Image (tube, rainbow, N blue to C red):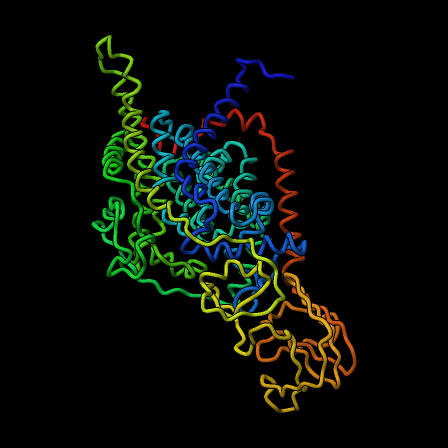
Length: 611
């Protein structure tokens, strides 16, 4: 049945399509250089992200497997516990498996830009009640500022999960009225985990926690009770739905911890430089990191609107957005003593693995964008009350849009100079070779293609300190060697090698290794890759040798299948399935009761309106 042309449903549908169309145009303009350079891959950390993406794409396309292991990096390391692995996201699969890594990563960026822009526009309109021009400006600033340009163009693909924040906050607020929206909160949080959001996920916990506490300080008892209910339900559902990712990640981090010592600090004057510098030297002395970690260009026009927005917000008693901008600006400024927010947070579990406080700019600019949009909205209201000559009255509604477009153009000019850097070699088009480890001197230029080439390396570009054997070998040589069983009391890590045994066949997939060997006497069959406790053999006794995968076998011919089986898989997968079922039941059964509808109020704005 067709919808009535003037029905509310049709109008809502058309408005939604228009918003996403604007978001697509906004993202398309910013990321056009990536698609224009169709034959090139990304620079910076994109080669590492291309590598991890290829691990997932090759595992699925070539072997029909989920990528539990990465045989192409560091001599072979777990992929299942890799915090930055993205290939387990169903959205990632829908984009990358048909289009491949080369085009898939560019579509991945565009998809998140559309999600972030549309979500921020809706948030500004529904929660902050900004005008269309104010919401347009706010959404564009947040998704196009220097933070987004530098991090996304430079290969921090896991940071793209930040673009879910506007929809996350919308669902968080709606859940106070309708508990079913807590399912949306948990689903977004779980999706961020699946997208390898090692920063976006913990930051989101702080983001939502700040929003809740700030509203509780001004809320009534019934509102506080609803907020507590929302928080409890969302946390439980997130832990259930996301178990398939947070459990293996936490296990990997507990086995191979990576505490970070970071003492970087920023002054307010340096923040101004971060917000206004159109160009900058690559290094920013005395800071230890390169400029892309600090560059957050918004321009003087945006800063002027932010200042006006702060004044208007305080005048109207809309303090939450101002508090948010100041709160996360304090995080951005780094470590200024034991009681500074960044110092306190860095002392907590998990957050001790994160560094670079400048990355909190993603939330500082979130609130700055809302303040700028608020200032433009009030300017639009001011213009609407002014008298225009009847011959120029037609220009009245255009004035705020001209201001918005002028500021947006400035931000885009700087952003496109950053996004126009796709100059890497093509990825994912290499022919498969006989599996072996290579020792190329061009590691950083080549390793993104190692999965498609079906080879590996002992080199590493990985933040996780995986255990790595120093006794692996390189070259197009047999990938299995043989050794005597270590004598009792001898050094088992350095067995005596022998040449009397025969390797009849060797094959591997993503997380299996199959060998056909003939042992002249009882001994060890040693595979040319790292050992990890989650490897299991179909026959024989596992006997790691100097950090290498090995099995103890009797004399005779044996076919051994090694398989990497994540030890958390049975219970983490079932837990996520239980969370998914629980979410579906809540959506079906938890309909608002008449009393709840009577008590429900319109969704509160981010900042309380003046009484």
